[in-house]
Structure formats: C-alpha cells, structure tokens
Image (cartoon, rainbow, N blue to C red):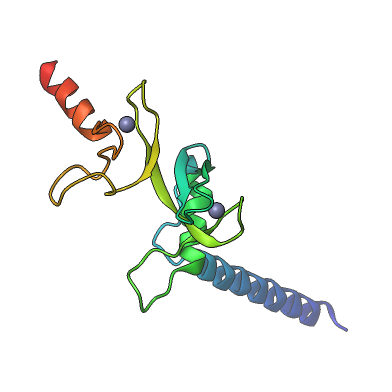
Length: 140
Ligand SMILES: [Zn+2]
Ligand SMILES: [Zn+2]
C-alpha cells in the first residue's frame, strides 16, 4: 500500500473513534455540561423507603446524579429510586440529616414539612437546617 493511502485510512479511523467517543459521552451525560467534578467529593444522604429496612447512608453526589441520569424515565418527571445497599430493593431516595445535635435523624425531604414550609423540616424534632442557617445569616 502506498504511503498516502495509509495516512488517509489512519485519519479515517481516528475520526471514527472520536465520533464514537462523542456518542458515548453524550449518551452517558445527557445533561448540558455533565456532572460537576466537585460532586465526586460531596456526599449526600439517601434513605430506603422500605419500612422493614429504613437504611440510611451516604453516597457521593456524583454517584447519585449519575444514577438518576442513567435511570430517569424521560416520560416521567419522577426521580427514579436507587437500589438499596441493605435490602436490594429499588426504594432509596435522597434524604437529609437533621443538624440538631440532639437529633441527627435522617429523613426524606418534605416528610416533616407543611406545604410552603422548608423541605428539610425534621419530622422528629421540627428543626430545619435551612431555617437555621437563614436565621444565622439574619443575625449577622
Ligand atoms: Zn433497604
Ligand atoms: Zn431532628
């Protein structure tokens, strides 16, 4: 084979590889810009909705959003549940931990709040992390 033909084939292969990589990246990250890099260091609480399990644990935001991206149903606005690492059922949703030092309960967003209230109102002690931080910034 002559040198020029070889080069043309080589370029065609590289272009094909780049195009394929682009398709894969696009399929994995349908959201614009993908998942921010710092999400791999930030943790988020999740909790199992199975009443026999109630397992609460932390995963990275990256893990969480990657899972949501991959498993979201485009026809439904609902967040897909994660697979529980304790009972194995698809019943794990994002949660928050009460920052009241005497409480520390992990609950689902909205489970302790009335409509229009802070979503992170603790159903156990009534503490809200958002309200607390707003009160603090008002005092300063
Ligand atoms: Zn579970
Ligand atoms: Zn609490």
